[in-house]
Amino acid sequence: MGIGEVYSEMKKEIPKDVTLVCVSKTREINEIKEAYAAGARDFGENKVQELMDKYDNVGPGVRWHFIGHLQRNKVKYLVGKVHLIHSLDSIRLLKEIEKQYAAQDEIASLLIQVNIGNEDSKTGVAVDEVNALIKACEECQYIRIKGLMATIPIGDSQHCSKYFAEMKSIFDNLKKNKYKNVSMEFLSLGMSGDFEIALAEGANMIRLGARIFGKRDYK
Ligand SMILES: *Cc1c(COP(=O)(O)O)cnc(C)c1O
Image (cartoon, rainbow, N blue to C red; front, side, top):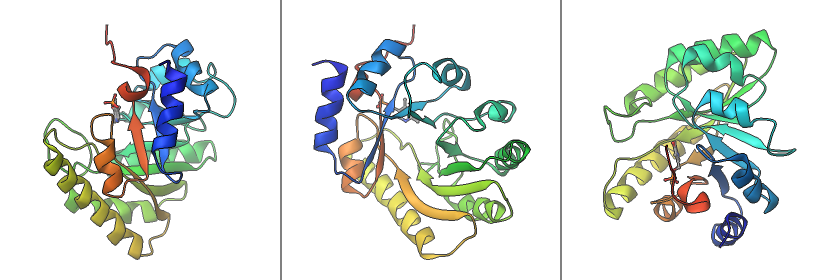
């Protein structure tokens, strides 16, 4: 099956209200265009330079998602270009996003990345830091928080379920409250290896790379 067919099959498999982000990092433009031709519009990149290089080359109507760790000195390049940044992971980054988006009078849509497994190797805020970050967002003018994102520790399906369920419960609790600049719309969980479990636990945005494009080659 080609990339377009795989994408179409996947769209049939997942519920209509779930956003499928095709993770196109390391992929050539012609591969991305195959998914685009089959109807894909949401693409995820984890490096600013790579996103810039691809930005104008896929087709009209693409919604770029930034899913990697975002360095503060690169924020300026994303202003007005990305649909959603999945990786807000500190107040310092928030302040830089507010500053750069203010300078161009644009609104930034963000997900808070939560380090749900407390892994040293991963970015994201700890669960007990989420509230402080939300409070800081309430002070901003150019920031809209749209939900939460996480990548979970490697483990068996029971472990995956547990972490996804924890994220869903944090999401639901935040949703009950009314915060300025915050609406809990998207719960971005699940990658190629675990997206079925993420969907079962209530994710409504999944990020698939290998499952759509085949195995990545980092050469
Ligand atoms: C690479 C990446 C994905 C996609 O991973 P696959 O296993 O290829 O589906 C999803 N989310 C993030 C944050 C990534 O960096």
